[in-house]
Image 1 (cartoon, rainbow, N blue to C red):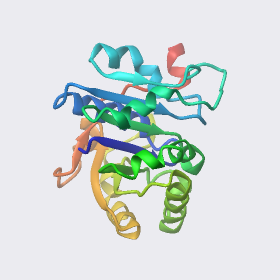
Image 2 (image 1 turned 90 degrees about the vertical axis):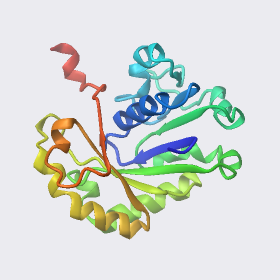
Image 3 (image 1 turned 30 degrees about the vertical axis):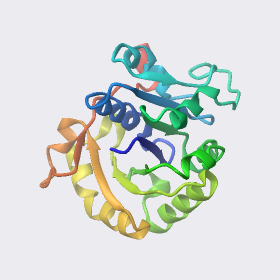
Image 4 (image 1 turned 90 degrees about the horizontal axis):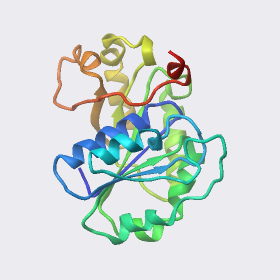
Length: 221
């Protein structure tokens, strides 16, 4: 993975789970790893919810002061600048959903333009708003415009949350390949739990996820 890895895509595509798992993978290879919660739109499924666990693993978490509360103030912490100035750190930037969430990255364009980064579009082919190629291309174009950054790869994270079955991911592969070609990028990773990945005939791009985010009602269980 590159020094800076940006995770973007549609709301509910699973960006935060992927961001956390990417940070953990980076930590296996590098001492100085940081994950930035840049979601200024959605109060749920934030990286900050796993802050204690990540810090125990030696991963620094940068998040808005009001992340994971019911108070939303769209201000990002100044510590995010350290990602660009400290060349020894490896970072994962977890953006909010859609082009609204991508706005947060645009203000760092003057730093990012000189970096060798990857920005991954996370695809969940079973969500209504990303179930056809034209909608995917339109959303990707809006994300690039608002973030002032280029999408460099696609991640297939097709799932139905707790209703997911391995065949859902396996059956999505042809569509994911078409989406990557439409965006003129590589299908970089196929993500899911070990069970979800089990039905893939080719596991060369498989990236197994450990799940950390919970639905709001899970906390009541």
